[in-house]
Amino acid sequence: MTLRKNKIITIDGPSGAGKSTIAKLLASTAGYTYIDSGAIYRGIAYAYKTRKDGGSVEELLRDLPLTFEFGKDTRVSLFGRDISGEIRKPDISLLASSLSQEKPVREYANAVQRSLATGRNAVLEGRDTGSVVFPDADIKIYLDARPHERAHRRYSELASKGSGPGLDIVKQEMEKRDADDSTRALAPLVIPDEAIIVDTTGTDIEGVLKIILAHIKDRDGQKK
Image (cartoon, rainbow, N blue to C red; front, side, top):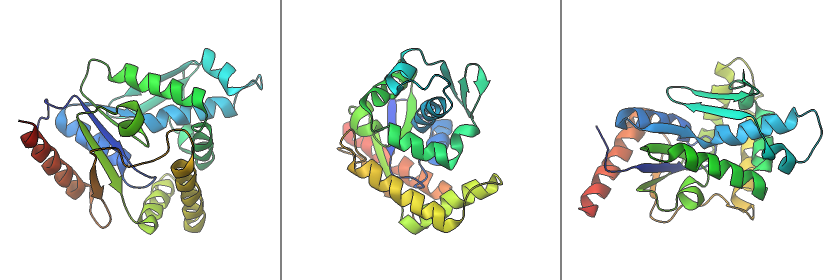
């Protein structure tokens, strides 16, 4: 199915709702570019944690040698070194969530997303892509699922890579991140205006894609 009428599609929601997986599949199905906003924040977090000069985040961002490649796989490099695997570790995830509450970090990440999406059809996923980064996106999706299922998904993802804490710890970390993301003063996690809400609880990825495509087709029909 080709969705050429919609140049920007955003997918927001909490951790473990399936944003990255469905965004990749939707982009592939539609022939769009997939832009992983979470990887941008994680890249910043990794650079901040491993910096040698001990400077502030503002100083770090002035000349940050981070590069991003979004296609079939997400590739993030720092000083030319691939850090794509390292940015997925739980401690980097928590630091990324914390740093995302700082205005310079969000401005940097937003600028990167807008630059990467300019002039192309793109699917972006995150926590404020439809509410802040692209409030005028052609299609906005908000994915959610019950907390226990989201924790299981995250735990399984980490376990499949041969690393990660136990399920209880994963659930605690997810709950903390949900609380941080939803209550922060700057660009909190919200359901964007006019977003299509999809609960993925108990639905496999193909089923979620089918639901979203049906919603997009219906939304297209309303715009004609």
